Structure formats: structure tokens, C-alpha cells
Image (cartoon, rainbow, N blue to C red; front, side):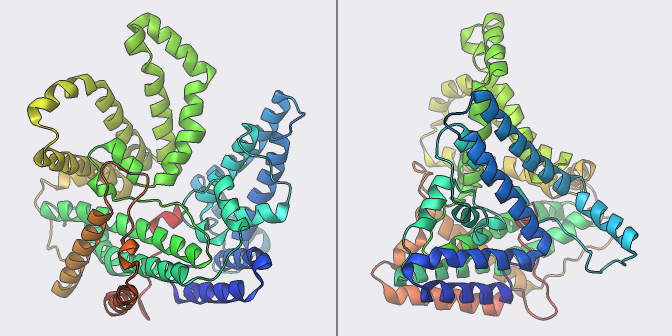
Length: 504
């Protein structure tokens, strides 16, 4: 079920009504049928995969978190569950197992293509798998007590708003939100509706229009060359951000309607002054997750400690202690790239290229410290240069991310300097370009308001402007709904694409 479909809005409306009609003490249990129905709309196989992950990680948490068991047995239990779930994720997402099962069953039973035996990748598998593995590791490391109530754990593991694209939630945080009493409040309704409308605006008004440009340029860069390539690269940056952050707005807004708070996942990333800051502002919860469950454990692991000892003897204590950090960085960013799609274009565009940026920046930091006073790094012109430089570096990675493969990405760079092989025409009218341009300016203004250079952990919300101003609240809601209805790309004969990260 697409988050920008009419069916989804009807589903959310029905779920919210039933949720608040029920007595306060049993409201959280309404989430059980809601989660199941949502999964079934995506396909019975999605429910089966979610249930499999929930059951195995529930058992894994109990075994890994036993107080009287030996370390070896707890490690073994956690390892078996983690390998099972990661193995299933890799097999399904990256090695076409679903297609193999479909083709095998069709051949065995004589079913034709398009029959009830059609399969697809389970909805949001990358997100819920990592989240549930994080729970098992927290139990293993003694950060939380294993959950003994399966119903309570099932609500957490299958909570429908986050299933498609995150954000990543910690069990200790989300379970506490689910367990507390939930009461109907005007503030929650106001905030939730504004976030949902803002997400629809980003997706249907901005991302879908930018996607027309992106599809044309990336689809044929023998015709779309020179300035068209640059336009396509910028358009994809707009499309991806509006799409993914719009999805998060819808998800967080729906959860807020249920009086359940989830963490923010974006904080004006295109205003970052470095790649490291960019990743503290883009997909925030994934970055925090991988830091806690992969990067820091790697640094504490015996192999990297040994590498550190050898490096200190070979290169000196100051330089040698950084070698394990660089090794951990390579592993971390390779994993990030692989998680995005399991092929080289993602491993390079979302992984190793960013690793190169960060590690080279760390190595060159002593030089930067010497030249910053000369460049007057505390002044606005230099800060603007940093923002532009970071954005350009991000765009280079996006070319690999969006291209068909690595050779196609390299050809995109070459196409910037080629003459067109035919007549180029992007199917967007002047009116659509104007709507897209004005909408991007609005999005930029909102992000600029949210931006906090010294505080990236708590993004300032535009909704704060509506406090004690009920007229402004309704003005924003009516305005957003009107803009989406008038300028959104949807309706009969038009199939709005799914959110990009819902397929990762």
C-alpha cells in the first residue's frame, strides 16, 4: 500500500477512529490488527517475512539476554538469529530469491505469469530487519532486559508506520512510547495532519515533477548532454530529498496521530558544511544505528585492536592509532553501500566515495587547521563555500546512486562534455517548471528555518510557529491541502511512484 495513495489515507483514518474509540488501556492493542492489515495490503508474503523476523528475534533476545547463561552460549544464540535474518535479507533483496521461488512454483504448478503466485520483495525489509537485530544485540550486551511478552514485542516489531522506510527505532524508546497511555489531543491531530500534508507536498508536488527530469536525463544521456546532465543531477538531489524526507513526514505524522512519537530522520542536510555533518543530518537514525551496532563494536574488536598495536609500532603512536579507525570506516561505508542495494553503484555512490571524503579529510586535518585562519573560516563567505563544496561532493555520489550501473555513471560524467546525438525535449511544461521552482524555494526556506549550525540533534520544527496561533495552523493545513490537490501529480491515469527508499 503506497503511503501516498487514497487507500492509505482511508486506512489511517479508520485506524485512528478505532484507536480512540477504544478505552485508553487497550488502545495499543488496536495496533495489532492495524499492523497485520497494513502488511497484508503489501502482500501475505510481507506479513510472513515480518512475522518470521519478529518470532526469531524475540526468541533470540530471550536466549541472548539470559542472566545465568554462559557468554559463549549467548553469543551463539545471537549469532544464529542475526545470521538467519541478515542472510534472509541478502538472499531476498540482493540475489533474486523471490523471483526464483516464483518461477519454480509457476513451473511446478503450471501457473502463468500474473497469477496469485506472483511475489515481490517484502515491504521495508531492510529497515525492520536491522531494527530487530538491534534489539537482539541490546539484549546480548545487557543494555535492555529481554521482552518476555510476545504480543508487546510484536506491536513494536511490526509497527506499521515505520515498516516502509524507517526511521530506525530503538526498542527501549519505541516500546516506551507504545506502552504509555495515549489520549486524543488537538495538538497531536494538528501536528500529525500538518506533517502528513507537508510530506504529500514534497512527494506529489516536488519529487514527482523532478522525477520527470531525472527519468529523461538518466534514461538517455546520448541525447541529454551538457547542461541537461547537470540539470538531471540537481533534479535527482531534489527528487531524492523531497521523496525520502516527505516519506518520513508522512510516517512521523501518522504516528503522531496515534500519540506515538518517533525520532526525526532529517535536519536540513543540504546546508551541511562537511560530509561528516551531512551524514549527521541525512538519514540520522541509520547513521546512529550503524555507529552503535557496527562502527564502535568494530573499534573494540580484537582484530582492530591488534591492527592498532601493529600500526603504532610501525608508524608511531599518533599516526598508528588512526589506522584502526580508517579500517573500521572502510568496513562501515562498504556496509552502508551494500545495504542500499548490494551492487557496485551503491557501494561506491553511498559508501566508499563518502568514506574517501571523510578519511581524506581526517588525514588532511592538520593542514586545514593551519590554513583556516588565513581563509577566515568563521566568516559567512567561507561557510557558504563549505556548504556548496559539500553539496557538490554529495551530487557526485548521487550520480552513481541513480545511474543504471557504474559504467553508466561514468558515462554520465562524460556526457557533460558531449554534443547531443539528437533533439532533446523533457516532457514538462513551463507551468510545471514554475511550480517546481517555487516549491523548491518554499522547501529551501523551511529547511533554512529548521537549520541549526551548532545543534544538529534537535531540528527546530516549523510547527513551533503555530503555537498560540490556531488561525495559522488551519491556514497552513488548508493551504497545503489546496496546493497538493491543485498542483500534485496524481489521479486517474497517473500512477505516483512509490517512495524511493521503500524499495531499499
